[in-house]
Image 1 (cartoon, rainbow, N blue to C red):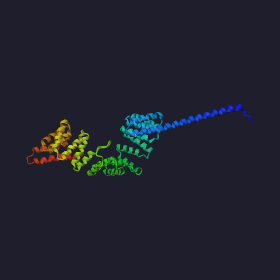
Image 2 (image 1 turned 30 degrees about the horizontal axis):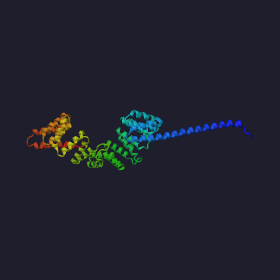
Image 3 (image 1 turned 45 degrees about the vertical axis):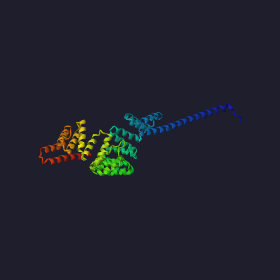
Length: 391
């Protein structure tokens, strides 16, 4: 059969054109998919880098990284969430709220958005709002101990310790190795003034996490409040001698334990170490002088206080301590002047009046009663110092 090339060639051209167009379309689609995959990988790498920068305390660099990532992928909710965290670390709560709103629109079921909404509300002191946000986060992600702990902290801040205990009692089996739940339970028992249960909860937390400074600090405070000064001191001495960043300085509490146990020399050294770091901590300086009075160094305390009160003439507590020092040093006339000055500077009259009255009584008594009056005034001064040593 003879081929009619005049008809075949046009049809071949059409088929070839269609095939060529299809190949070009497939190549374009493949190119688009490749670019999208590359953009996704690049976004993931940038997100990881921003996360690391936030963990290292570099929120400014994290924000710069995220700005670039969001240019290429503006609809990624995780990027907006990370940007909210960066803005929060930088102190821009308004910008952080805006980023959270974008993340919520893009991913309404993302529990981490509600969790961070709670953190922002907590930072603003809006504990009811924070509690509501944490509650939503827990509902979306019930297996997250992080969200549960945040919810319980909010309840503690709202003064709802019974709710905390009720919530944690049923979740210990879900999180058997999480020490934080025990810590929160202990704090709830402290709020309820149930020190025995608080002690047990802190001890459980330490058993789960022996390195937890927070648990040891809490246990030491509960032991001290329970009058178990030796045990409290033992726990505190297992902590680092200097306070770690972000943690409370526990040396004053350890010093108070030593005072309660009659170890005035150790307490004195601890107060001195605290003042070496910050000489302007006047409450600790008063405690140092009180301990020195208990140690029998009345003359030294008197000298130091007189020099200090030349610079702080309106300090009622300083004048009261000077009155104790003068009393214990045997100078009752100067003690009376110091107590009177303390009252004039705003000291509690009901506390100071018995000291002045005892001194006045001695001045009216006969010489035979003088030694007894001396002892009475000195006893009152020492009792006052012992009562205040752990304040």
